[in-house]
Length: 140
Image (cartoon, rainbow, N blue to C red; front, side, top):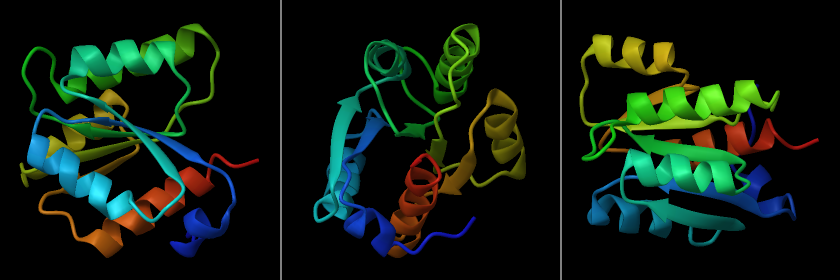
């Protein structure tokens, strides 16, 4: 399903995003990309904090780095998917962002339960299009 990036800006509803990334520069960059959109971004500095915030919050979308201290993105994704499955919840889109360009990394991410795999550096237009596509897919 393709969604125009303007969908997020014009939907009138707030998109709740959990950004799980240990790199402060990445956190600032992604927040800058989303600044003019109706998004509420909550940040987790590693996968363990991300899982904790996810299970105690209500998010429309997760943006997940794969290589982090304490708990990596694959483990965090598997725990989020198990938590959703155990509660019979609809799967929240998880967008993976990684600097690793190996095709095996993409396969591992998708096998862990991620929705889409993107490699860094991320272009703003592509990032916004992915946000629009997956945030739009959860609107009822």
